[in-house]
Amino acid sequence: MQSLRSLFSAPWSSTAKLDGKTVVITGANTGIGKETALDLAKRGAKIIMGCRDMEKAEAAVKEIIEGSASQNVSCLKLDLSDSKSIREFAEAINKEPKLDILINNAGVMVCPYGKTADGFEMQIGVNHFGHFLLTYLLIDLIKKSAPARIITVSSMAHSWGSINLEDINSEKSYDKSKAYAQSKLANVLFSHTLAKKLEGTGVTTYSLHPGVVQTDLWRHLNGPQQFVMKMVSPFTKNSVQGAQTTIYCAVEPSLENQTGGYYSDCAPAKCSAAGKDDDLAQKLWELSCRLLSITWE
Ligand SMILES: NC(=O)c1ccc[n+]([C@@H]2O[C@H](COP(=O)([O-])OP(=O)(O)OC[C@H]3O[C@@H](n4cnc5c(N)ncnc54)[C@H](OP(=O)(O)O)[C@@H]3O)[C@@H](O)[C@H]2O)c1
Image 1 (tube, rainbow, N blue to C red):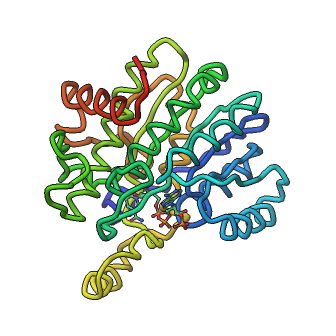
Image 2 (image 1 turned 180 degrees about the vertical axis):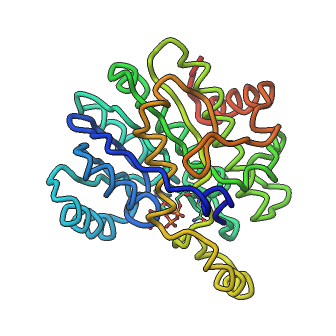
């Protein structure tokens, strides 16, 4: 939903340019990611979109090139539900001379129970583990490019989530809404811990709630839920409005020295107590490294 503040105050805008900057955005063939890519392309950035469906991705690239008048937009195959695909994507990105902004945007919501190629429950697997591994694989390039930013699109749904460290993949019981909330809390905790690990490197991190936005994300809602969303749609955001907080985190000059925070409606916002729980964040970090078989101190 749109907050009261956003209804009564002028929307955030910035003329910040990104000439010479390279941006990677995951899940940018539709929704919030596509609008983010279009906006950042208009600002002069080189845009690389990581998408799982190359047909949809090519069509989006074409649209963004037409809409931005920039030729500097491309897509590469990235399936965040498969670590092999993530590693291939990262290998290609690591050939770039720099990476100034990484936007972990892709997401799946309340899907039926399913597993990724690596055996993770789909929502925690794509939304959290996939982006955790991708960021890990790109971190040296990002550090080399500092000042740089890592933005992770979470949701206000994080605030009713908890992290089930004993059964992160919901193998004992699966509640699709809880699993989504868990994955979005994991996004906030990841960004929070990452900020600490990157202290002094010039790389800053941001997590955010984009609003309730009319996108394909709602595709797995059942009939009555779709009906409710239709009823409340006048109070929701379209994709352009939904992209603004991501764009704000990517370009707002006053955020240059801010790190680890949570944002909503183009402003700092309060995340849940669990989202600031250092102990939980560290445990999730360690579990993520163990399950992904990586070492990331
Ligand atoms: N819409 C909202 O109300 C809302 C609210 C809070 C937070 N968010 C967050 O905003 C972000 C963007 O969502 P959206 O609303 O723009 O939804 P969307 O229109 O469904 O876009 C999601 C994107 O993620 C991609 N994706 C899904 N699974 C993937 C995978 N395994 N590998 C690579 N890409 C994958 C999708 O690709 P395909 O097109 O191929 O499926 C699509 O490009 C998500 O992180 C979501 O949790 C959205």
